[in-house]
Amino acid sequence: MAQVGFIGMGNMGSAILEGLLKIYPGEELVFTAAHREKMEEVTARTGVPHGSSNADCASRCKYLILTVKPQYFETVFQEIEGELRPEQVIISLAPGITIRSLKDRLGHDKRFARAMPNTPAMLGEGMTGLAWEKGSLTPKEEQELKAIFEVCGKVAVVEERLMNAVGCVSGSSPAFIYMMIEALSDGGVKYGLPRSIACQMAAQAVLGSAKMVLETGKHPEQLKDEVCSPGGTTIQGVSALEEMGFRSALIKACDACYEKSTQIK
Image 1 (spheres, rainbow, N blue to C red):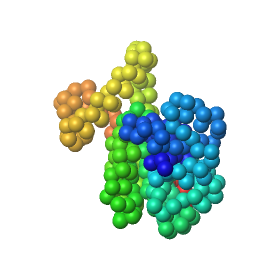
Image 2: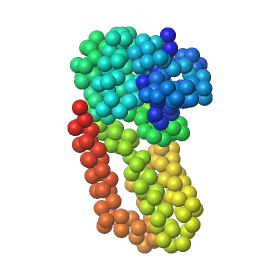
Image 3: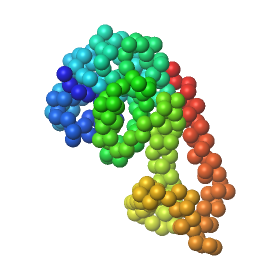
Image 4: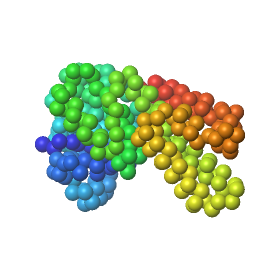
């Protein structure tokens, strides 16, 4: 019996699987993917065995991670529902799909958790929100579940009602940050910097700024003020961002993500 199984082996599934190889031997993992060529490539590269089918994978593991997109859930559910056991923990990475809806579809005797990682997990720098029904997991299972995602970065356990907010703030936000890096790079190019240098500078500024927030414990507003000299260039830039609605745009982006999450069934 494997410890962790995956149905779906896209970028996120691959990132988690490769991270887990740091704490589990390959034989403790199992996976399936949509295409046999993909399964054979992953097995050859990692040594992790693949199941003969989704049902086979589901029958062989303690923790089953569903990394498929919501539109494929029903097809997968039809294949695996006969193999699921009450002692398993089934983990959905899909936004907007509640534990209640999963129980309604697959059985109220089954146990579920939800996880929302983000793409920096592929470099071990991800942020994952985790949720499960209170009392549904043993303390050991809670620790094992957190450890699965800690191999890809940081983990925060939240109430399930907050998972859509997790999707806004960490799940989708890398795309917003990439847009900001691209725009800063454009600004540098506008004033003569080569594109490669401008992009490197913008990305490193974001990375360093994030570490300042995480490692100093200071509020972002305080850190911003420390950069802004009275009458200096930075406060002029901050003023322009305020005038153009920078904060409001980010909040509106979160609003749009949240609204979309509530519409997923």
